Image 1 (tube, rainbow, N blue to C red):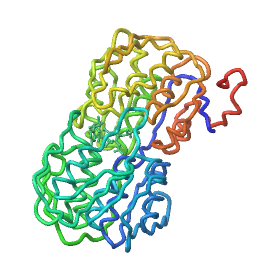
Image 2 (cartoon, rainbow, N blue to C red):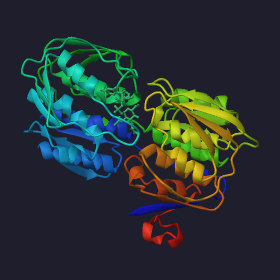
Image 3 (cartoon, helix red, strand yellow):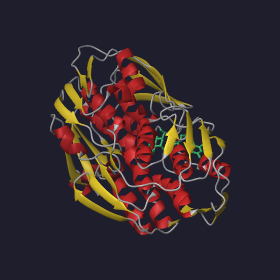
Image 4 (tube, helix red, strand yellow):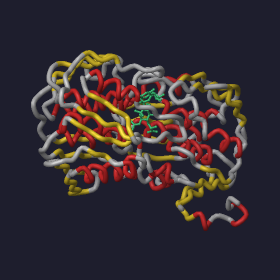
Length: 431
Ligand code: EPZ
């Protein structure tokens, strides 16, 4: 298995380009099933999650062509309605097939995705939404069985105990595009990735108003047609690179991202006193002396502080003098990186849904274990600020959501290399 060897070696300097957003590309790939015409997608990141989703699309009958890197032409002339367990279990986001299969086939059988390390990943709101669209939904043998022969638009409130649902909103919007009548979807997710999906659906002929607001109105149409669409930039990758610049006190320009996609995140960093220069399509982190200020942050649905940038901020706050508090309201168990950061010398205690981070800690390199996509990134960020070498194992978690991570960061001075676990010093290999 691959590992990363990271050595702390001072400020990162230079420009780093952001790729296409994983969490936009996944539902957008599923949305190509809504038409029998060709959809051309650009700026699709090359990630293992993308490869899984493309494999599932081919399984249900889509034809996928990659004329050049980052571009996919997808045609789903004839498709089946079953997404099997052995494919869905590899990636939860395949639950996004529910909406398009229901809309196009008027039936669907999609395996229920498992949970993951950041906590249970229920789909009760997805099911509630489909039932509100007059679908018959049954859970049996680990599958969601949907009979949508009588599908009908209608009013839906899609909020749950943690607020809105991103992929739940994606599923119900996609199902409603081809459902007779009008669907008024309240407490819809407003994440930029949902906006990007809706914008592409409109290009395909869908009738959607209120895009970007918590209330969407979808008027069903007979058919959707093909289109060309370029996936938006990945704001989470961008935020991760911003923190790479900040934690090394470097001078890093993150290019290809509109700062407005990172409102709450940049607001918190400004509150912490990080010097930044914001342009139309870039964020430049500037060097600073002394300590940043502590923060008290709560993760919330967009436009609140994004849960996907919670672990990365925690890594930065280990270097900030004083007590910072990070409260996780979306996935209360999303602190798997904390024990690993403690191995590197961080002083963090978990009190319920909050991490209390006492800085500034002198971090030292150690063998650590990645556990989920964003926790892996947090460990690497901490390793940039640590004394000595850090070996990060199970980096397949990182490969799910960050394209060419080590190449992009090495290009701005990071000492990070991808090796095999057998390259690790014998005394470090886990027993
Ligand atoms: C999306 O997951 C993202 N994944 C996640 O990114 C992200 O962390 C999450 O949204 C929150 O922003 C993709 O877009 C592929 P939710 P999703 O439904 O849609 C609860 C990453 O690192 N809930 O918005 O699965 C749920 O338990 C990944 O890139 C229900 O209770 O998240 C959670 O507490 C990790 N019932 C909250 O809502 C439901 O039916 C938000 O979940 C659905 C969700």
